[in-house]
Image 1 (tube, rainbow, N blue to C red):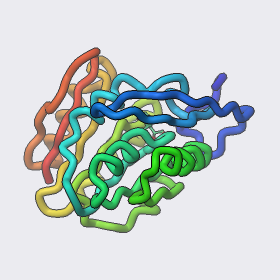
Image 2 (spheres, helix red, strand yellow; image 1 turned 180 degrees about the horizontal axis):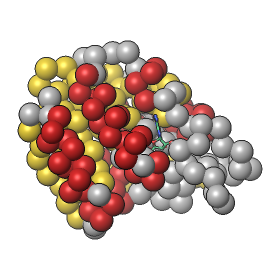
Image 3 (cartoon, helix red, strand yellow; image 1 turned 180 degrees about the vertical axis):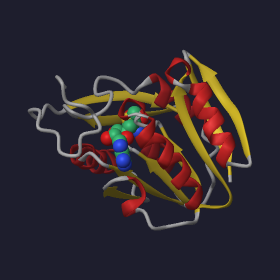
Amino acid sequence: MGNEHYFTSQPTSKSAAHKITAKLRGKEYQFITEAGVFSRSRVDQGTRLLIEALPLPPEGRMLDLGCGYGPVGIVAAKEEPNLEVVMVDINQRAVEVAAINARLNGAANIDIRQGDGFSVVPEKDFALIASNPPIRAGKQVVYPLMAAAKEHLAPGGLLCVVIRTKQGARSLEKHLASIYSRVETIAKGGGYRVFAATV
Ligand SMILES: C[S@@+](CC[C@H](N)C(=O)[O-])C[C@H]1O[C@@H](n2cnc3c(N)ncnc32)[C@H](O)[C@@H]1O
């Protein structure tokens, strides 16, 4: 990836598609990954913890916020075929491989969009919003996304976020607690935490 950040909207690094496999929630998945896309050599450990911990609703709408090549939304869509999964990422190349990966894994209940956060996500009835947020982009990007998520959740909806414990988990937890009615740690391990914040 060189000096290019994974949260660039139009990566200029040379394309280098690569196929990885991963067992998630007991099933095998294949993902095409790309240069300039987050965690291209394996499913990130934090992402894995998030996927295993997600309380998936059986139906309704779910958002994978900052989907990268798509592991969170694709596993959710495969686990719950009646769930309508929306996936969004600012990175054009991530969105392209996420669309390929949805087909590769036979997940049809997915709608993938490219754009900056909620600018392309008008729906306000998500039962679940899940994210491994772009911490490296800084609090000025991540915190407003966490706040905006609340406006897009249905009553009783849940925001689930994974973060590396040493990359500001405590301050993120405090930030969430200042916005949401309840914040719980639903998983921890390998230096990561998953927070679930209720509207
Ligand atoms: C830590 S990565 C997680 C990617 C993927 N969910 C995974 O777990 O492998 C965060 C993602 O957020 C995306 N991102 C950064 N800023 C964004 C924004 N303003 N709106 C949407 N996506 C954004 C990045 O391009 C990146 O793909």
